Amino acid sequence: MQFADCVRSRKMVRSFSNERVAPELVDHIVDLASRAPSAGKTQGWHFLVLQDDETSKFWDTTLPTQKRSSFKWKHLLDAPIIGLVFADSAAYVARYSEPDKSSTGLGAGESSWPTPYWTVDASFATMTLLLAAHDAGLGALFFAVFSGEAELRNLLSVPPDLQLIGAVAIGWPRTKDSSVDGSSEKGLSASRKRRAPSQITHFGKW
Image 1: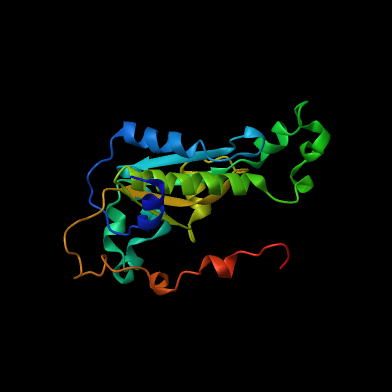
Image 2: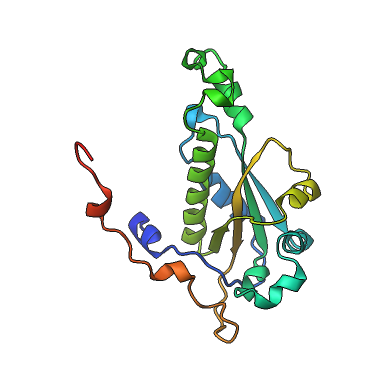
């Protein structure tokens, strides 16, 4: 797939089959994601992969059974993989304390950073991962963990100093007509008109 085609055809997938994704395919898309830009080549992000019973625990924690009757995307819960993206700010402070970066002063602590590049870099990696999944024929959905984060972190033994960027559901897109339960419908934001380059780009001054 050509890059432009991959970018233009990628979309958030909310309906999955429960077919497993081979471990080597997960390794492949994570390898591509690891090549995203990273300040000082710190690479301070982590991808926690949940499968099988682990995905059930994820949904039980973040979307309890009593709330599922009103949940629109029924087959989102069939995704065989839920990946959690974390950013490690301490890795950046440590990297910029090293001799080749110490003159920046950014090794003094998180507060020295005008922009939290751990968040930026983890976001770069996540976008690359979404594109890599699509290029491999997989479906993926990035979404926020709006509830149950503290319980989830405790359940999965996540270090407290890591920043949760969000979750990525990954799997094979469901091909059957699922219009009965609405899971084949697009998200409400999909109808918003895409901004043209002329609305985005500023040359010379604002």
